[in-house]
Length: 383
Image 1 (cartoon, rainbow, N blue to C red):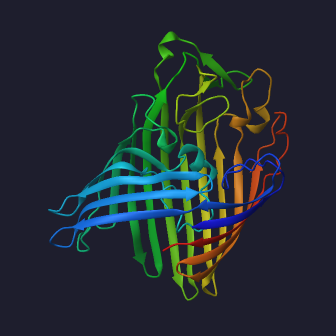
Image 2 (cartoon, one colour):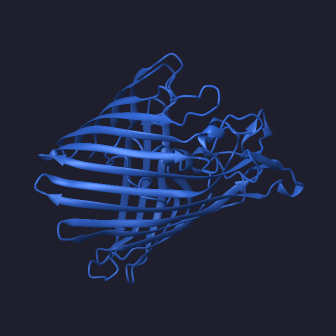
């Protein structure tokens, strides 16, 4: 459970620190997360996992939703393989799969929330994960699966295209008092064009701009959604507790509309009319520094992340007449600084401040940095 109080710089702040503020409010109490998770594990005669059923709900003032609902079947001959089916986390990246109950910072980064909204999706996944400690490969985990693509935002899959997602993860390996881990991630997918109008950046002229391809063959065709990611974690164990550094980088191609690069839960429309597709090339990263102070009860948090939804244009090109570039193409970065006090292994309090920065462009309303910093004070309990 995560009750919290937040203060923004102005009324109606657009935020990725728990959602947008209401029009006339700059402070709020909210129940950010309140989840109950049930796992039922059926073991073999050798006490190894055979079947796992997981069900999780999130019940807050905003409603009740299902977060997880899946079954995992384990191979019991060598105990190396499993298959999962249902609603569960996409196997992409470190931050997306790091549980909100144990993540140090209040929220995932802006890029995670836009490209992987809700973190979960419906699909099937095959995993290689040696469970026996004596296995020479027990530090390796490889997941690969097919997913609808719209995540928890959609009531059903709105097209027949599926996302293929995979991740190779090297679990922590100790070298003296240092633990090293990391991973590589891949997503190959896309979604259906609702119209024949597909816009892509033209860089051949003096002005970079979105140019339209209005060929009839574009209608119903797949627009690419391709992500590539790499991450590394380094943890130093010492007398105070731990010092940890994390770094993660994503890049790729993302279809969207002129107003959004978020993955849609339904085919994007306006008043029931399908919207043109805008294809952008993006990149972004997350960097964490976590430091225990004196002992494990006190922890310093520093996080920096950025998301550039359109790496082919620069800030001074956004807002030029006739380019079709919009506020959706603006790069954002966030520096978060926080402190955590652990009362016990189940309970902690977090004080965290987000310094949010956007590019200064020629676009009206975005010629300077917006006042959208956020202070979060949270009590967090898990059992």
